[in-house]
Length: 152
Image (cartoon, rainbow, N blue to C red; front, side, top):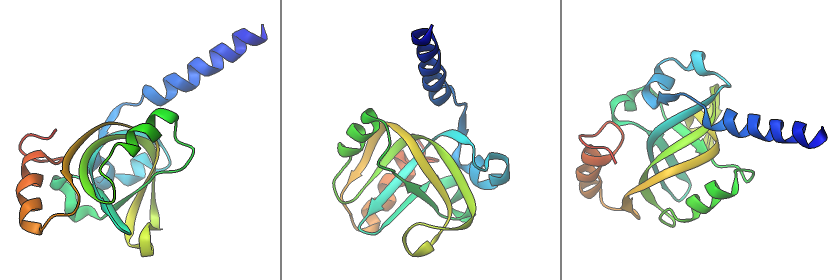
């Protein structure tokens, strides 16, 4: 009986994580109160470097900056995927399952209006490795970033 309960619990928790309905990042940022403290599944672009980062979509850059928190207790597969991302700096498209917070300041120097605390990351597609000059970034992002012509 106990093993059946453990199996049911494990099944419930694994389904609860993967069964999230995908939400567009712009929908989250335009209606944050609808998603406050809820687990969401979001596909967005993650740009990062030394002491800065941003989870974004080109369609809603004016809605405020979103910080992506990557806690140590993510599942092993998410940690493995994260380690394969470009070291130090880059731009990637990523699917994040996590919890949205807003109403305070988040991230480095409290410079972010929103925070998405990741539980899982997956489906990483590299757009750019390392930091590049703004001209190079401005050609890659409109093509392949979230909200671009043909996002990866």
